[in-house]
Length: 254
Image (cartoon, rainbow, N blue to C red):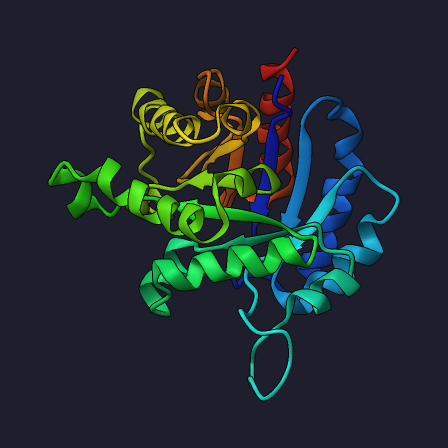
């Protein structure tokens, strides 16, 4: 049985006060979650706050990005070793906003996956298609290309050390959600593609859904056999909403 994971991607949101309130709220309610895994990925500057608030709890924390470099003259970048020093467990790589706004291509994302893995971080690899790509019927081609960049660099067995998040770009921050059947179809495709190379890895690989997962649709999405949790954007910024999704993940393995 794969343990569901619900990870909050705060993106570039929050103040010192609101971040503290959010962490306090999550910490207060997470005791009700007994089977699912819970994590938060705040902006870099709030990672130490997350460490301070969450150490000793079941909640893990991570970052939203990292550099392909280890150290040196790379102004504005953050190294994997720095994230490890502040107790990060996860790091998101290849989010669609990094791909579209900051021109991160498949090769760069694959390198970030490799760097994270080498440092002992668990990379959360984001894959997904745009609305135009879905309308052209090339969803599987796009997702396969993004996935194969990592497999080509690291090998399919390396995916055992990571998590995949399927995020249809057309559903991120739009309020539009892929139907459970649409999401399951792509999740099954991802698992099948990994299985064609490493069946055992595929069986244990956690594939999260990201794209406007909310308390009112989380249970239906996570009832699907290949959806193992969620990478949560907007709903992760309100403790009650985030915890409601965590409870849905918990119930999915009851």
